[in-house]
Image (cartoon, rainbow, N blue to C red):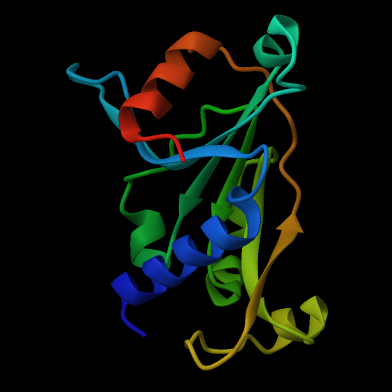
Length: 167
């Protein structure tokens, strides 16, 4: 598969398996600091309110950011590692995780696709080449450690998601 095809596949799996469904709110290609010299974009941003029946439930919500990386060149490009949420994940093939796993910050989580029915330790030892002929499950291989948001308010991030098209 090409780099673009892998990115599209990982993005599709992420939307289908982690972002879609009742009570889930997300946007893709969320631009922050729009119109400034330090504009940045997050591949996918999810808002997880504590509840939707109270003001405090919404205000206490968490933002989870996902950056999709298809290959080592994509990871090293310097683009799209905007980890501004309370929880932050890289979504990548297992083969890439094996190459860069030790480089990642301690609070960054990793999600990888694994063929259905395959043990994740077996997949780590012998990664399956990505293709559309198999059924894949996204699996958290490394949990994200929650951190406090420092730079953006709930209202600002929700507006950025709204501008990008909340789904």
